[in-house]
Length: 437
Image 1 (cartoon, helix red, strand yellow):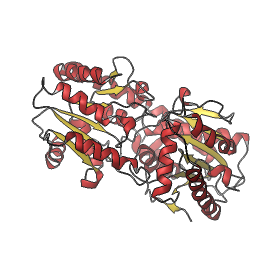
Image 2: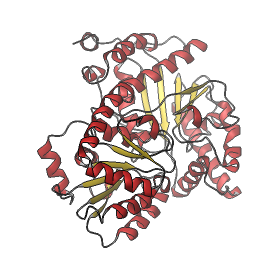
Image 3: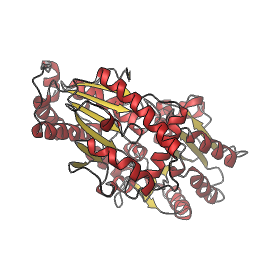
């Protein structure tokens, strides 16, 4: 059996007054046609990245609208996840190729996961498979009654041909695929039904819920941040694509001009990302001896509340990625009114249009110049954050993502109608809440 993630309960009515009303109203109408449908989301880990954060909110909202949704995890050992990390990097253009031993290990583990899938997935109408780790399961599984969707969250616009040729044949088993940007669709994708929509953040999660200023300051002091000094923060996995060392170098360029400037590098270390430990050690070595640089992880108690406080109370947030599928942390920071300096890659420009939310950069030098500019011009920084917050509200909150999901399911159900199913009624309380209560 596959492991099931306990996601608790969420209510879509709670987003009334936060997300746009039109999105909430459309969700209620659309869910009527899908009520009772069974959905599974399949991923590699329940923590430590954007996919897990999205599913922790998205799955219970499916259930709140009357669908029956589960989130399950594949099994794998460290050697398997070493290979999947190489596939992940290769699909984003990293050099190299998989050895025959690595291919065999990946496929053998995937076959075992496909067997587990058969045991408990026979009656799912829809199966979402997230990212490269479980990507071959649609082809290896005998469950053909389900509608299979591959949700690729990374930038596969220019994949390493060796890695792409390995994965390519297995993707034809899917009914549809979803990418964050049109540009991310890889060459010769063996699917006709392709959809494009970006991820979103949950404004009601512990990471994004408004913190009282006194509590935020207390949290920062507790983890070693001095709240009377200026602060720059980058949040994200310890991943070379996110260029944490480049952020350190940009910060070091600015430091002589702002001597008391602090830098916080915050990341989660996750089961499916063994390379993260290597990058973490590199960052620790590069910042050793500088008491104003704080390298923080989930292993020392830095979680959602601490990240919330850091993003809300930083003068500037940086996301200087070299490759980036989307970068939820950009919208998270902008939602809190904090300006972001982002790498001009992947889904980051989508979140930072002209004069909204922050500034885009290409190099360490540009990053340093943008940092110094916003630190010296707090009014410009404030206006960027203010405009960005409304932009995020309209485009990158969870109800909009849920609406995209339900539109896709409705599209697939129209092409191949669902079998008869038990209907789960919507409570009168929920209906009243979504209708304007």
